[in-house]
Image (spheres, helix red, strand yellow):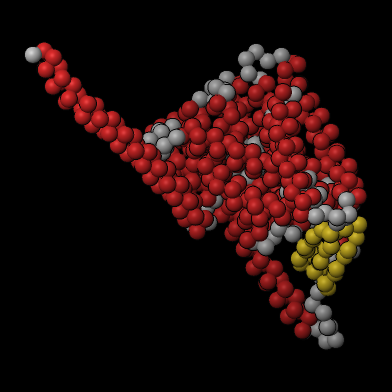
Length: 485
């Protein structure tokens, strides 16, 4: 009887177990399908909202961050595998820094000369000082957190400025060239500040403070010197730059970036500086840039979308953004923008209101590296969640206002040039025997340090006014076209 009952029970147990297993399997597949669906929704929303932001003349990173903040863990929490997405975003950041090094124009830096260095240093140190003063004065922060706030407000977004200058057809003007040169140097300063923040953790000593600076300068001098002096000579000796050779160079660049990232990291500098310098080594090889834009750029763009929508956005305390303390501190953090605007006084001579505003508004756009410094400070425990929220809001406001202001200034500048050209032509028509309204001057010369400043000074001494000025590079030569009257 017991045996029969047991057999009877066993007969029912097997189907029950099978049913349970089937249910678990179905649940597993349902979870996978849900995760896949929500991941696709998140990626699509990030792309669509980013594109929509660009349509209204707002940087796409703003739309991408909004998607991450809404769908991310601090609000709706519907994005699957957040840790994996954050890691992919970090790779996007590395590609961005590597590209920044690859896109360095050594001839441009040489042409601009010391003026670019001055704009970069002033445009970094003034906001840094103002940010530290505001953080300590208004929020009564400790020195370390105040330094993190100031360092976050120090970098200029080269990507935003570059895009607006391209659209405004001002990239090849003296002001445009100065902005790009200063932004490159500005990025290097931001990387040094980042390494300094890491060194100041705990109880900093004089050696701990000095080591990152000395290490960064040594890497920049050593690797940068190789990129400027040795690499071009090596490339000249290679007569046949075949597709295989370029592919090997691309592989070498990525391998070098991994090596330099480890070297700079263990050398107490920023590993991002290592990625930047690896790209800079190959900046004189245009074929690598072509490969980058044709094969890597789209991958980088998507990874950067994830950087802004996950790595940064997931850490923003969305529910605290509207806290009066956060909003008040955000408003105060916009004051350091004045430190960026001051750089307008170093615009190419003769200084005008328009050239002052072009330089000032372009340099006042905070962006990618501002988020990088703030995010690193948060991860290191230097910056609190509330402070991080205020810094993010201030950077986002800057990323909206500054491009609009720069676009309007460039539009006004073009209108002023058209009016000036019309006035000159009408004035010429009234004078008998006059055949020319202005002179078109084409100059091709060997590039040298401070070339543009020297040329503008010479024209000024000759009492010539420059209506328009464009400049490009061909190997070691500068090709300039000027309209003077």
